[in-house]
Amino acid sequence: MRSTPTVAQLRAFVAVAEIQHFKDAAASLGVSQPTLSQSLAAMETRLGVRLIERNPRKVMVTAEGRFLLPLARHAVEAVDAFRTTALPDTWLTGPLHLGVIPTVAPYLLPSLLPAIHQEAPDLQLNVHEDQTDRLLAALATGAIDVAIMALPVTDPRVRSEVLYDEDFVLAVPADHPWAGADDVQPSQLRDEELLFLEEGHCLRDQAVEVCLQSGVTNAGDANARAASLSTIVQLVSAGLGMTFLPDSAVKVETRGAHLGVARFADPAPGRSIVLVHRRSSTRTEEFEDLAEILRRAVATGMPSVRRA
Image (cartoon, rainbow, N blue to C red):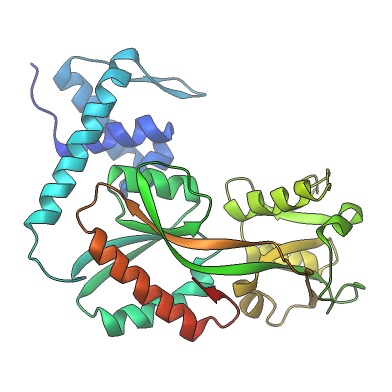
């Protein structure tokens, strides 16, 4: 018997269709994979329509699913807008789900969390650390409200508030000739063993792009890769190569490590960090205020970066 799908079922469908991976879609919604699978299957049964084609290698949206996906997405956005509008008209209160990429979270949160506690004490902050693509997917499905990530962000459904800019530096073994240098040219990297984060991290993409623009064609070919900057710094300390670090990470990641830091000659390569939220959100003015709180926190607690 056909019946109306629930909001949870619509969220499950949108997440799976956009992420095309059941485990990652479930993580973006904060539910277990079996719960998401059961929710989606129940909706397909209710509607009498197959929305997702499942096979061991890939998740694909059926023709019926592609037709219904924009309607499901609009329905979820409408429910979120209704919920937000129905909340009391107060400033930065209630639950807020904030996503942060892993190459920002450990260095920004120590400044960010006390600032929010002081300036928006009624805000119930929930922090989600994840890679850029999964955070954008979570934004699209409403699983998170805002996210902090690095430019470029090309998703047309979101808008960005620039928080700060920072340079890249090189973490090198302590006995490397470049340790302490401040005039390294990116083109000099072509003869060095470069270590990168695993695929999916935007910092990896940005570092590889710097290398390619400077004629370094072997970027990303190293045998050693890591899922976190802390791990990759240990590899550098052991003499396995060198790696890019955002300037904000230097103080934390080099503490107690047997390595040196080399800086690029001006203009140094770097990145811009932004606060991202859905264009359709009714809390845009609140998020602009939140961005300003974050900028003040950065100015106070992160002297190595440049406030936007």
